[in-house]
Amino acid sequence: MILVTGGNGLVGRHLNDILPEALYISSKDYDLIDRYQTDVMLDFYKPNTVINLAAKVGGILDNMNNPVQYLEENTLINTNLLRSCHNHNVDKVISMGSTCMYPDVLDEYPMKEESIFDGSPPMENFAYAMSKRVMATQIDSYVKEHNKNWSYLIPCNLYGEYDKYEEHHSHFVSALIKKIYEAKNGVEIWGTGKPLRQFMYAEDLARVIKYIIENNIKGNFNVAPNYVHSIEEITKIGLKACGKDNLEIHYDNTKPDGQYRKDVDSSKLMSVLKDFEFTSLEEGIRRVYDNFSQRHN
Image 1 (spheres, rainbow, N blue to C red):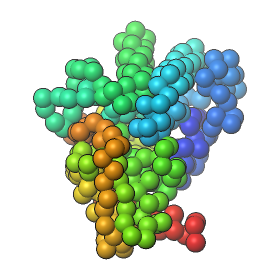
Image 2 (tube, rainbow, N blue to C red; image 1 turned 180 degrees about the horizontal axis):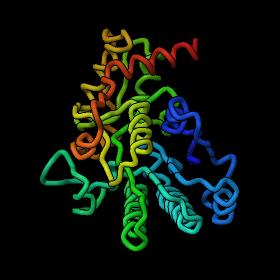
Image 3 (tube, rainbow, N blue to C red; image 1 turned 120 degrees about the vertical axis):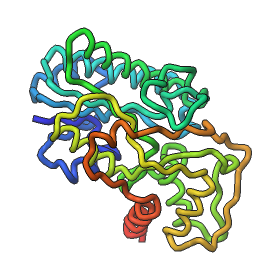
């Protein structure tokens, strides 16, 4: 049996669409910050595979204002779940990392899996990044000491129909879609628009997870399409996809840019995936915008 934590989140709901036979658990069912509740959950369901999508996530501003919450809650979730999976002899565990785990600055881009610990992560989400580094170290340690078939994926920035759209809690593309929908004269974006980013349609990550489970793929992988765009370019692509490329872009230079560059190399993953194609940014944004528009008309 496959158990998915964080089942009501962005990736969890997309995964539910294509892997409905799994059991999806949310924080309303069990609080994974609590060790006892985590043990009760695994003791009751007795899964042989756990996909850990549970995490406290948010935008740059929320990360900067609440570092203790991001560090403690995510570390507790991962520690409790991994310990309980070990004690309950769970065969396979897949956890989610984040590209913010990588150093703020590297000599070589795109970033490869072996460079995670080659420098300090970006300060604007340092606490969240460190919680993910701890998670990666925990999984690698369980694999080394107990020969576990456990691993983690490091996806690039995500967006999708099930995302949050509130400015302080959403991912960039989802916040952008809401701004485009509500815009009359122009769209404001934070910072200079110069930072470089990869964005992935969340359904694509769900398809990768499903493939890894069905084919028992082992190893830790970056997950991202092979294109990189500046925030300004992504905004223009979004405006075009939403049919509003006549709108002007305004830059709020009082807000942080975030890490300048954090694109990852997913060639290791693509070497084991067969004929996998990522959804184009324009097509993905168009789907999410159409869905958002239908729900708000």
